[in-house]
Image (tube, rainbow over all chains, first blue to last red; front, side, top):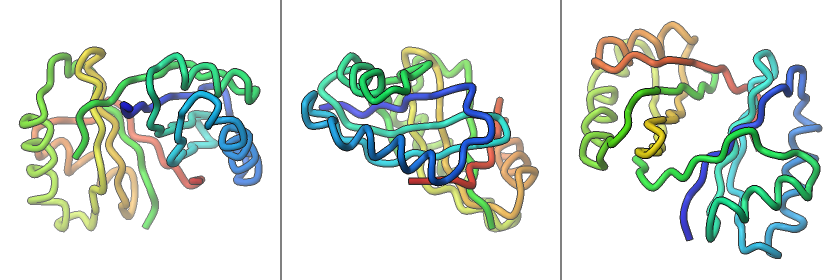
Amino acid sequence: MAKFMDVHLGMVGITNDQLKEAHEADLAIQSEEGVVFERAWADPAAGVIYCLSEAPNEEAVRRIHERAGHPADEIHPVPLEV
Amino acid sequence: MAKFMDVHLGMVGITNDQLKEAHEADLAIQSEEGVVFERAWADPAAGVIYCLSEAPNEEAVRRIHERAGHPADEIHPVPLEV
């Protein structure tokens, strides 16, 4: 398992309910790809969401987000952490 | 206090020791601006660092990172979190 930070753009005006709903859509299917979505943070003014996960690989993260209806704009492996 | 995610670019090849050293430089002076740096994640291949903090405002985060020698390229307030 590796850690990933993915980024979603163009989400200007996202609400807390919408963020929660999107996160729950990921959680509902994440086990099918062995992904564990940990946390997500949103800047509604800039429309950016940062999403932290553990996954077997980048493609697994990409597939879950796509299937949940919110494809990621960037997915970064983040092997270093403090 | 509010939560912020800041981004540092151009850090290709950063090592775990360098990330830790940079984080400790922030921690050493963060109280002077009332900032609490919580965690940071790095993608050494793409040279991107994501840094999560709590702070009174964006300028406080900006000043600590600048004084610690690693100005942030982006600082996003992230009032929404799951």
